[in-house]
Each structure stands twice: as structure tokens, then as C-alpha cells.
Length: 424
Image 1 (tube, rainbow, N blue to C red):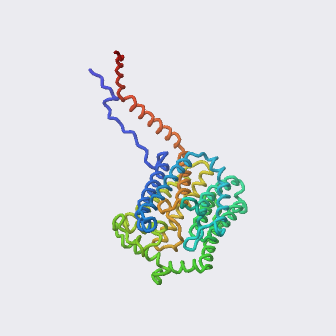
Image 2 (cartoon, one colour):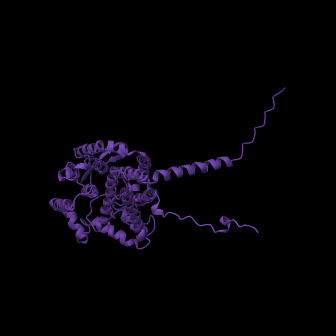
Image 3 (cartoon, rainbow, N blue to C red):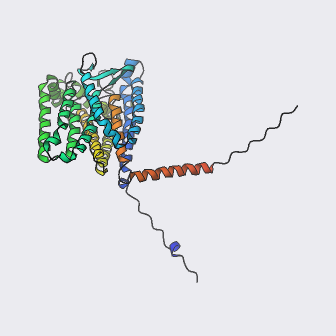
């Protein structure tokens, strides 16, 4: 009688697969994929939205888009480099970066140094037709310095004076310099970074509620104290009351969104990017052009990509075991979330117009490069999540094995024929 091999007769049991979001590198790939898709979409939309203005200014429809391509070409290596830096390097550069941001924010306000555009002095001209916006460096500097500060003082954070000082004075100083430009949108983002850090570090509810109320009250006072900002606030509430002057940009943005319908007019078919339409179609209002050309489907895609990026940032902050990495990831995630919310909210008419770019999509190297460096930090933290180093090592080993098999499968090179001696 033949004895059956139980191991062969028994049906093979399938090995349970790990859910995608439970894998060690899930956060890493979510950040990488959402960032890459937003960059690609942004480059295409900058090309489409800026083509008319670029041709009128530079006699070429591609000049502005080529500049954006240069910014991406600079930002991607910077993102890769920052994703490889250890935590100690980020903590070392935190204070110098914040101090450099303060110096540049003061310089931009010096007459003859800062460049004034549309009533705001936010840029320092650089050679080659480029501009530096110091407030963008201040966001990254505050996220790193605030995280390092709170980690160094973690044993003293039970006392309110150690919890708030010197963090809040530094935030107020940054906000004051930015408001002198003026730039209300960036000030909101800076405040959001500080609130995110204080929330994660465990600020008591009574302190956090008082601080939040003070920030909201200060924002209201600043909005109504200056005639220019008050005019923007009233035009936001009733843009169609003066749709040719104070409410012009908001109304044109709503026209662009409403004319896109479900699927849009088609890529490149925007009417608002032409003369007499949106004045900042490729910068602050690129989301409106997305809605006009790609429709509701395009705008929902952008929202989904930003939601994925923010979710991944929160996930990275929760899963990391290093206190500095947790706080730095929190500050960067709060920055990206607040800036996207303020920009999109202004375009759709839910918030006042503040003139802040949409991260990773709007034109501008001063905003894009620091944002990519910050995302590189998120990738760096994600690479050190529990189980991530082992998964990266296993992936590298599989790649090496794959290349080894390919190399072994190559046919051997044919032996060269010996050359006949040259005779007479």
C-alpha cells in the first residue's frame, strides 16, 4: 500500500497578507506618492494657467513653466537629501535657520532691499530674475526650532511659563515681521505651526483654549484695524456688491469654478487665464483654473491628494518613537494643512483672500523648495518608523538579487578572433 505524503495531499494554505496601511513603509509611500502626483499636476497646471501671461511678458508660452521646472529640479534633490539626514543634523540646523529667517524678514522690510508687488513687500530679488521669500524659510525654521526647544524643556513643561516662553514670544516676533509686509495668510500658517506643537506636547485644555481665543481675537483686531485688510474682509462677505473692484478676484475665481462643471472645459481651455480674467491664475488662484479646466473631478482629486498627504503626516507623527521627530512632523503637517486650507478656502469663497500659494502646485520657488525640504524630513522620519529599517533593507536586498539574476542570465561574450599576423 502506498503511503500518501500528507504535506503534498493537503491543500496549500495561503499566507495571510498584511493590510497595506499596516505595513512598515506605508507612510513613506503615501507621502512619496501624494507629493509626486501634486508636483506633476502642479507643473501641468502652471503651464496651462501661465501660458497667456508668459507669452505676453516673455514672448514664449513656456517660460514661466520652465522656471517652475527648474524649481522642481532643485527641490527634488533637496528633498532626497533631507530624507537621508539623521535627527541630530536637523536639531543642529534648527536655531541657525530660525535666526537666518529673522534676519531676512528684517532685510525684506528695508527700503531698496525688498521687492514690492501688489502692495506687499515679501521678496528679496536675486540674480537671474529669481526672488527669495523669507517667510517661507520661517515656517520650516519655526517647526524645527520649536520641536527642538520643547524636547529640551520636556521636564519643565508642567509650568506654563516654561511651556510658552520663549516659544510664544518668538512666534509673535515672526508674526509681527510677516504682518509688516503685510502677509496675513503666512501669519495664520505660522500660528498654526505653534498651535500644533503645543497641542501635541500636551498643553492643558484651559491654557490651549485661552491661547486659541487670543489668536482668534488678535486676528479679528488685525483684520479690522487696517483699511486694506478690512476692505478685503468686507469684499469676502459680499464679493458681488463690487465685483469690478474689491470683489473682482473672488468673483472671477467663482466664475472659473462654476464654469468647469463636472469634468471641466478641457486642459488648456480656461477662459479666466486670458487678459481681463484672474490676475494671479498661476499662483494664488491656480485651484480655480484646475476647477475650470478639469472640473469637479479635478478639484476633488487635489483635495484627496492633500488629504492623503496630511493623513500620512499625522500617521508618521503618531508612529515615531523619537520626541523631536514627532514634534517636527507635527509642525510640518500643521503647516501644509493650514496653508492648503487657507488657499482653497479663499478660492471657493469660504475665507478671505490672503494671497498665499497652494503647496506643491502654485508657481514659485521660494515656497516650493522649502516645502519639499520639509516633506523630505517627513520621509526621513517615516524611514525610521518601527519595522521600516528592516523593510528597507529587505527591499534593497531584493533589488540586489534581481540585478544579480539579470547579470547571470546574460550570455557570455563571444571570444574575440585572434588577429592574423600581418605578413608581407
